[in-house]
Length: 348
Image (cartoon, rainbow, N blue to C red; front, side, top):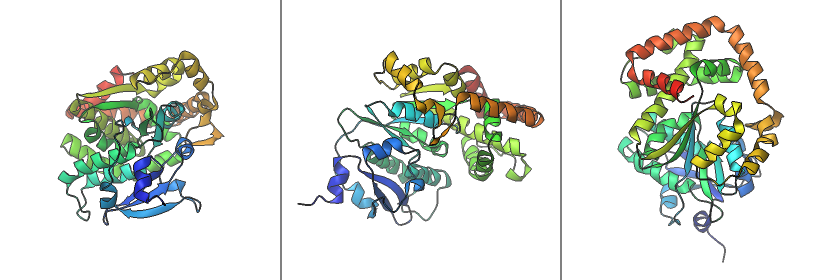
């Protein structure tokens, strides 16, 4: 007898909830092998190809499927452009980890969480159970002993609080404000991304801090970039405060690059992964550390990153200095920004 899609969904992670049409309450399921998960840098539309098998099903039909109990996923949340994909790739080589990198459906739910649109079939109060439901779907595995580790996109951090409110394991990745500014200024695409996200980040900050921020049009390029750091760090700090039962570790990406072997072992320990020193050394010596994690076919390394950041620091020195002072002034008036600044300093 031919297995139904519901049978396949209940069996393992082969059918991946790729995208949602929230207005119609429908889900696009894609057929992925375990190897496809391992290779994917992004579980979003960039995976689409004529060969990828897909089907649209009703949300309610997925919700009706009885699923076996699976461990709660572990999470990597971050402020963006701080090595989260690299860390996920390293840990994803562990046999006990099924790594999910940037599931697009989580970003869709996060956007709804922030913007609270009127044209979806759930009220804001009902989105909490929706998040729980989606987590259960993403938690499915292929083999006994596996556990899902979700590397979210930075835009998904508003969901960190509901996902961790009842406990769980998470790594919060960050870097200092100055290094973040250098990182974003070093790439044209990242600068464009910062500008594109300014509106929703201003909305998120208004919700978090309950105060008014300068308008987007009044911000310089470097202030707009700093806005990203403020928003994402403030979100992670607010999450930790609201989730006392969660096991949250913080890591400055520059510290990881300075001592990758030790930090990888610490991360593995925090995620309850059995990783020997020999295994950790093999991972640090592997091509993962010398390729661009989001596009492994390209070479990239800590030394090249340092060169690019040094160049950006030199070109934009005055703007960076003025922006650091601007953020310090904001921190004097807005406690959550002060907390973010203090966290970045004490967790380094």
